[in-house]
Amino acid sequence: MPAVLEIEGLRKTYKSRRRGTRNALDGFDMRVEAGQVHGFLGPNGSGKTTTLRTLLGLIRPDGGRMAILGQEVPAALPAVAGHIGAIVESPQFFPHFTARDTLSLLASAGDVPAPRIDEVLELVGLRDRAGERVKTYSLGMKQRLAVASALLKNPKLLILDEPANGLDPGGIREMRTLMRNLAESGMTVVLSSHILGEIQLICDSVTIISLGRRVASGPVDEVLARHSSGAVRVRVEAATDLPVAAEALTRAGIRVTGTEPDHLMLTGVDKPATVTRLLAEQGLYVSELTRVAADLESVFLDLTATAPVPGQHRQVDQSTKVGGTEQPTSGGWGA
Ligand SMILES: Nc1ncnc2c1ncn2[C@@H]1O[C@H](COP(=O)(O)OP(=O)(O)OP(=O)(O)O)[C@@H](O)[C@H]1O
Image 1: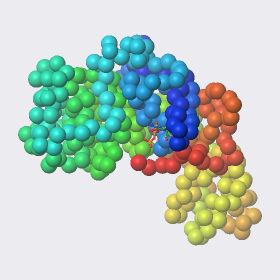
Image 2 (image 1 turned 45 degrees about the horizontal axis):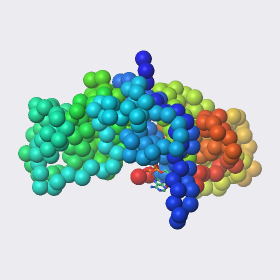
Image 3 (image 1 turned 60 degrees about the vertical axis):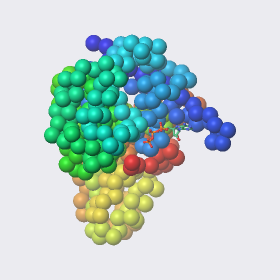
Image 4 (image 1 turned 90 degrees about the horizontal axis):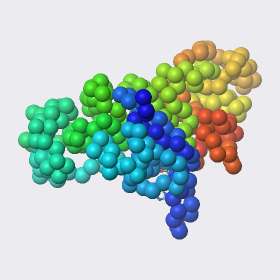
């Protein structure tokens, strides 16, 4: 079966007189199979929005190819646009309109039959509040209205940029249930998110992007299994010594992917005895050293510290880490 979404070698360079040249996408690949909830992950500035905007024909790429539902885009966008629902920029609604007014306006503009309005209101759980003005809605309700508007055309592919952004835990859970229900009804959902625990719960598969290139992709379980090797939790006798421990391990080329109040998370540890030795050299005594299955967050943090090899044009999956510990300049984390 052809992929619902296929991207190969996508390139985009922004040029501006003030900021110079910036490679936002540097030969990026992505593939999403039908009926999946697919997570699109990357640090700030890694190229997610550029990818989604390029897919939707809002930005012209400098190279590479893209296909949606088996048709090459942007050439076939007029033919496939009716099968795509997308929220890439924060949608703006008329504050004095009700949700029903808003959807009616969009439905008549898009030739969507009126009964579909009630269907989408039901799907996103806004039917009871559909007669209230949007300005009285919570952020979560506005997000659900945005999803409802993207669902009007009953798309085969739904693309959502940060759908859980700013939502409280209850809102995030509702969004999760909605995504799963949509996938079960046969829709393919691509969502970018910064909430990695959420992506791990919600998604069947993921693509991780860093510095405009793919660093990992595949079913969530496989990505975790492939990148879990060498994940270790370490405690020392006095928790106040953890910063010294982290520094010594980092100096020796071990990646510290998490610093908790009472322990450190490490990756890339071939021999746990190395950790014991390095810490003993600092006069620190290990009280726990446990191999753990990595979660998506630690895999992500590890992978996005991976930089392309200068001068080589290939996916970062095969490239090396810069200095073992260096973070990409465009890295960073959080919304
Ligand atoms: N219009 C533009 N002009 C110049 N540079 C841009 C423009 N838009 C994006 N960039 C740069 O391209 C790179 C990729 O940006 P992009 O917005 O695609 O990243 P992102 O992964 O969506 O980030 P975030 O998670 O912060 O939204 C960044 O270095 C960004 O500064």
